[in-house]
Structure formats: structure tokens, C-alpha cells
Length: 163
Image 1: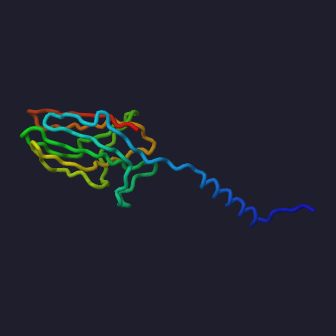
Image 2: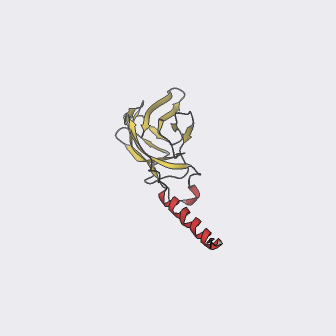
Image 3: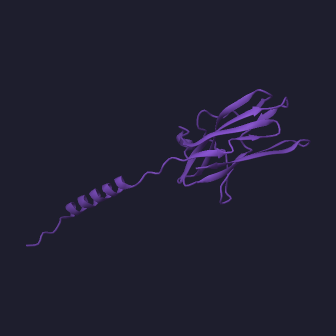
């Protein structure tokens, strides 16, 4: 006599195998980068880059697209002269080794970096700038390229973010 599994038995066995396979799937470690060098000097300011870690904006409508994550980069701008320094997020970019460039995200991790303010000597602004990046990223060139005025021209600083 030969025993044949019923359709229900076969389905149960297939579901059990699927559950085991999903349980064994290794979870990806959250991204975390360090800056090298952590401090760079601009014309009228110092930019200090602290931790850069994967973060959640807490807002579903700003969720990253599939295969991407939000990266919160801890930055501090400190004015070093009496010249007013305008703090903006749009000149801040991440450039990947493959040449792709990522600007700041609309969804912001907390504490959000204040933008649209002016600081002068002795004043500083601190917070997280948020970028939407591929979840398999390994390094970036973080750059701040700000066109202060026609007479002053371009002010450019950069640092490397690496795992």
C-alpha cells in the first residue's frame, strides 16, 4: 500500500518550509558612517560632522522608496567671523562612488537641523540633515557648496563618510 499525501498535507508542508526559510533570512544591519575628517573649515564657519546613522522620520508619507533608507547626518555649523553665515540644507550633497548625488530629503529625522537662519561669530546650529540613500551604500563624499555672493564667490568644503 502506498501512502499519498493529500493536498492539504502538501500545502501545510510547503507553508512550514516557507516559514523556516523566512525565519533564517539574515536581517541587514542599519547603516552607520563616520566622517574623515570630522571637522572642516569654510570661509566664515566650521562644519563638524558627527555620527551618520540610518534613521526614521516617523512620517509614513516621507518613507524612503524600496531599497533606500534615510540617513541622518549629525552636523554643527559654527560661525568663525563677524560675517553673517546663512545656513541652508540645499547646498549639502552626498556623492556616492558610482557618481550618483543625493540631496537632502523632505522627510527629516529628529532633531531636525534648523535651516534658513543666519549666524555670526560664536553662534552655532546643530541637528540632523537627512538624506535618502541606497540601503547597500558603503561611502560618500559629503560636500557643502555655497555661493555666498558674487563678490565672495563659491565656498566649498567636504569630508568622506565611510562605514
